[in-house]
Amino acid sequence: MTTVLPVRDRGVTLLELVAVLSIFALVAVMGLQSLSGMMRARDRLGAADDRAAALLRGLTLLRSDLKSAADLPFWPPDAIDPDPAFVDQSAGEGWFALSTFGRPVLPEAQLAGQTRVIWRLDRERGRLLRQVWPVLRPASDLALAPATMMFDAIAGFRVRAYAGSEEGWVSEWGVPDGVQRPALPKAIEVMIESDTYGPLRIVVAYP
Image (cartoon, rainbow, N blue to C red; front, side):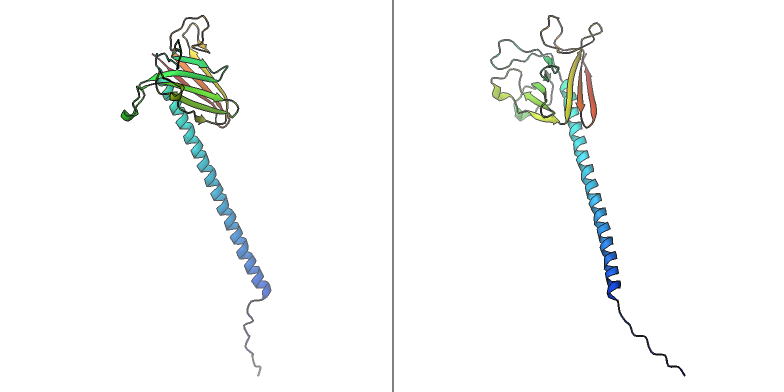
């Protein structure tokens, strides 16, 4: 008669333990890489959303400025003669300015609802800045508000004015050139060349 001896539980060998730990480590690394990728994707999407929101705010404000343009001269501090209601110096000096009327004003702000808005291209830094005189007859340069950056990564900036069917689109509106024109054109076109979004075009027509 053959006697069967019981098999002892020999436990886990060192090699098996190392293999199990390696598998767990591999799973942990893969999970960490996946989580890191998800976090980076979330950050990229969040940054893209912020840029898109800033772009929308800038375009909305620019359109609002153009739609509020008014046939009102602007008197710089200590000036003898006023500046025209709309001046386009975008081609040479990289800015344009226009008088506005009818913008919402808080009662406690004590403003007249008439402002002078300046949009200026900072060519060195590729930024488009906005600056405002709160009144059309400021007493001193201290009334000019600090410039606010509205767009960055800007490669170019151009403004044109539509003078009518005879002249068509012209530049440097409001700059003396011997041609008699009204204070405001029939339409204003602003073209912004964005490194991120490409060409951005806004056109506002006037009665």
